[in-house]
Image (tube, rainbow, N blue to C red; front, side):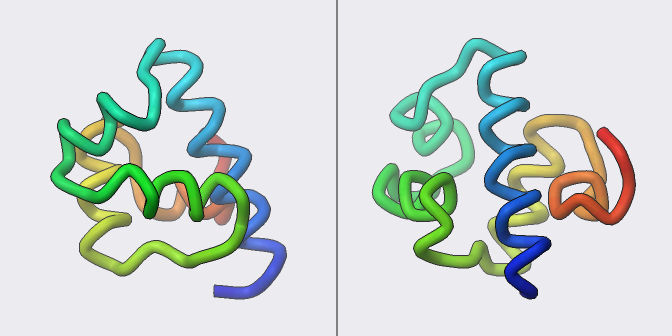
Amino acid sequence: MSTMFKIKFSENLRLLMKQSKINQVKLSAEIGVAQSAISAWLLNKKEPSITSLWLLANYFNCTIDELVGRTDL
């Protein structure tokens, strides 16, 4: 994932979490991903796997393209 997409992904994830009024702990429990992974994504320290992107897109009812900023949310 390019730096531009990583930054956009982080921004979009933060926005979706805020809109859904969900924190990292609850999101991690909902999608079955470690809270530390979500924190790393939000801080641009790690990239999500394709499986994690799919889980997030499914949870937030959006596309992976929208998550990574290829199309608008």
